[in-house]
Amino acid sequence: MSNELRFAKHRLPSGLGLHVAEQGLRNGPAVLMLHGYSDSWFSYSRILPLLPKDWHVIVPDQRGHGESDRPDGSYAPADFAGDALRLLDRLDIERAVVVGHSMGSFVARSIAARHAERVEHLVLVGSAVTAQNEVTQDLMREVEALADPVGEDFVRAFQASTICRPVPAEFFERIVAESLKLPARIWKAALSGLLRADPAADLARIRCPVLILGGERDSVFSQAEQQQLASRLPGAKLKLSPDLGHDPHWEAPEDFVFDLLDFLRGSPFASRASTPS
Picture 1 (tube, rainbow, N blue to C red):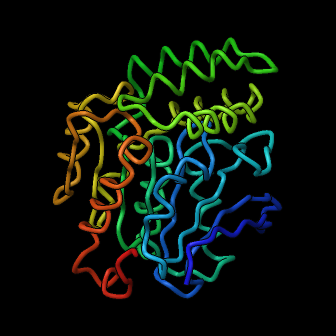
Picture 2: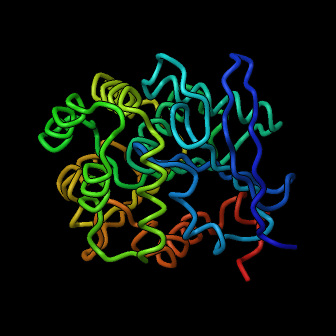
């Protein structure tokens, strides 16, 4: 059994084409991983080889991102969440562990709040109660000024600003290249959609077990903002690492996978999965 990646473009009932990376057993316990703003499936590439081989891991490029289609509109978290649910339907997956990073965490929360029957466990990475703060508002002002082609200097500075612990140079260059695939209109639509949403209302509707992973040196969402999120989700497990930034799965992939496995240990999900080799 191997963890080789498979790539396909899945056409949803809406007509939207989603580019998707998958690995593991198609009938294994399902894990849906949702990337952050301007990223792609590659955001999770450092942890994918470390996951149990019999998990069915599904990592889409969300609409507008990576190699997926770029429709003219509909870039709110609820729109991304609808795409994710239709993708699970297409893959005949009834329930999944849902992992979301940054923008993807708000999408994951939307799924768990509105379709609780589809989510076994929820993992929120680099998140907060709301995406609205001074950092993201300043970013929105920068993004509103973007024009095509989006400058590499802007993209490089944006991605570098989210990292605290150094990541491999080759990995970072690919991260920048993935973000450069987005035209200016997607940078604007995805961020404005995120900032206009009211995700706080979702929190009271989440009933599944929740793990919140983050870094104390997160440059997007402060330690206090992450702790506030945990306080709004009774029973949530919170782990903030002192030397990590906004991207724990980039900066410390082994620790990230250890925390994920530890969270799922003892659950019906974990009992169906072997440990990684």
